[in-house]
Image 1 (cartoon, each protein chain N blue to C red):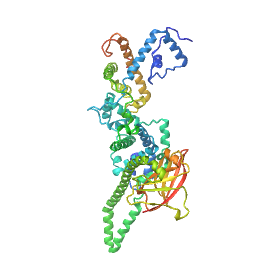
Image 2: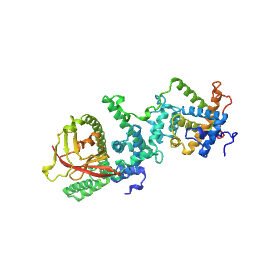
Image 3: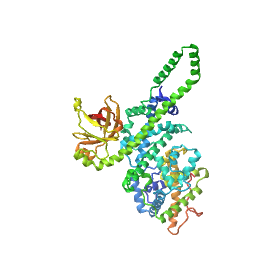
Image 4: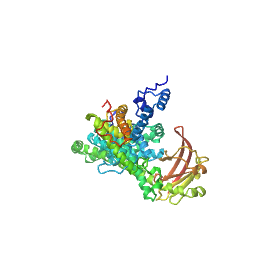
Length: 236
Length: 361
């Protein structure tokens, strides 16, 4: 049977059949680039770049897919076309995280201090690259977040509000790039579309902040107040 | 032509000049001449200078919104594990919408969503592309071999099993020698039991394949943990190994091999493997160990690959010309083995040295 042309769901069923070497060859050919990509990306977060370890993790992902009578693949229910690719990405990322969490736990169990674990024992993403904010700075940041959010509520038409706020805060607060925001499910925007929305929102907010700064030299002013100040962008 | 003094900065120019973010008007092209003109104008025009300073301050306040540190999760935060599924779009639309809006307003979850999106992204930088291209698992050869392993090479072929079943069945028919009984049995079996037997056979083989995969997974994990422990032990006793050739405490067997092909049985290096041996410490002597990635493959006498790994020689190993391997004992049975060491060169592995030894219990 020629497995190269069959849909992925059928291929997975074929892999669960006896003597499915050819089906598995096709499965690996089809999914290995995706699995390797997620392994490299996720392992990098843990500071791991050794090809030997990365190969092991690729291998471990396939074994995870086969384990317990293909339980991981059997429990997948396709909610939309292509969802299997996202599902295998998630399985792969979890395999990598579990591996490094296990290794870290083993090292701790062996009596090593956290300081001895080194970079490979710590998930880079969970470690701050900046010092924690002082209490004063934290309060100021909270106030600024509220003021800007009120400004967005006031300036953006209701039909655009939800998505515009989401884009703005994911970019400025959570640190997602425009392309990362565009890749989110149900965003239905290209990277250019996200950038364009961000540019409009940024101009709106900056204008309000500049107004606030100018007047704030004399007295502190609530930028979301009812007083005159910014001019909402025409696009809104 | 110099910029007129009364031509103040436009918003596009202001953004292009002082914005530190990547969000700039795409249409606005900012040449070196423009830059000079603007700088000169700002130096002279107090109004534009104040505007630029104010703009920079606003930009800095926006940048300060970024959560730079991971805060503790709150009661209403989704489970940390959920963010990968959100990023992959695997949850119902309403839940994804709810979670993403939560992340946009929560420093803890926002950073987890960012990490999840980064982990699952299809975009790779050149370094990552290079790394993936050079993984052993990216080679068609590895993929074919691994597909065979996943299917469980030792699972009996379907045709053989089926043939045995039919032969047994025909024996029963011959023994009774009653055509009517045979016909009845055939009808009974074909009509009823055959489907069940097929299913049973299929279930048995799937179960075998599954057990195979689970065994591999278990062995893989156990070996890695054991190797990790032993490697640490090995590092501590590396000097002792190099100077005396004695293996470190905790290894069950050791062997020192010279790179050559044997000419007769008398020359074969023998390894006596204790029944409970876990690992064999194999020291390979080299005239010079290359610094590239090395692949070590262990074959049986009938060219079956039983173990392989890739590694680099440590500084001590390079210096001493001795490469130390830890081979799991369970891959070794009584018989002759060939250990082939290859080195990576221009993306290919070329054979470097061959060692032979015999295992005896």
